[in-house]
Amino acid sequence: MGREATCAARVGQESADEVKALLESTAIVLRGALKRRWALAALQQLRVEDQSLCFEADGEAVALALGEAEAARWLKKLQTPPPTLAAKLGISPETPALLMGPTRGTLDPALAEALGQGLTGNPRTARMLVAVVQSPAELARMADFHADMICKTVWVVHPKGPAAYPSDGEVRAEMRSRGYVDNKTSAVSEQLTATRYVRR
Image 1 (spheres, rainbow, N blue to C red):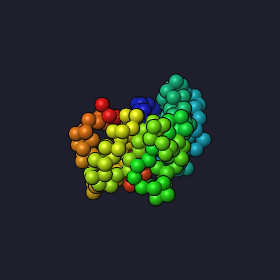
Image 2 (cartoon, one colour; image 1 turned 90 degrees about the vertical axis):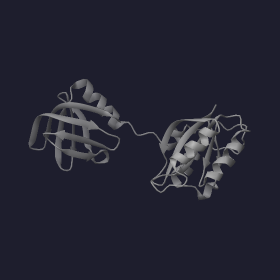
Image 3 (cartoon, helix red, strand yellow; image 1 turned 45 degrees about the vertical axis):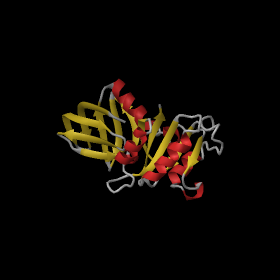
Image 4 (cartoon, rainbow, N blue to C red; image 1 turned 180 degrees about the vertical axis):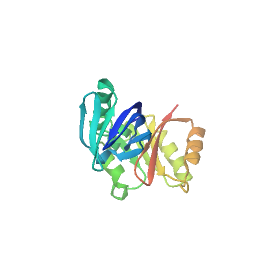
């Protein structure tokens, strides 16, 4: 979520005139005179009171004196559900994807759910190609297949982590050598990541 502020804070019976508060994608973190980390899922009774963002977590009442406007911004961020994987990938009934790789029944569950929002079997109506690859050779096959499609966008889905094969670097090098530019990444699941490439 990426917000941060320096403010006074009260946590249970403790208080400090100045802490650094960070609103991260999965947690609120306090640094400085008070140190805490609360998972966003653990926050209860979120509200703005007396120009402070207030909530309860781990049995403690918390008030961050962010000022009325900033507290309202934090509250809105906290109350807005994160985008779905389908939204991150841009898959919808209006922008359907064509799948290349494993059959839908053997897909990672998160990816299968995202594709359920808009999947087509027609290469001419697809707005993007979603290619699940498990070797560099599959990248070459995918690029040759995509060359005949009207859409210029392909999401390359592959394993992530230090031992991933092919690695991010291998995927990027192969795709760039074929005239593609990468412009977005998204986590798919604990095991998979996706990078969006656009054909020049």
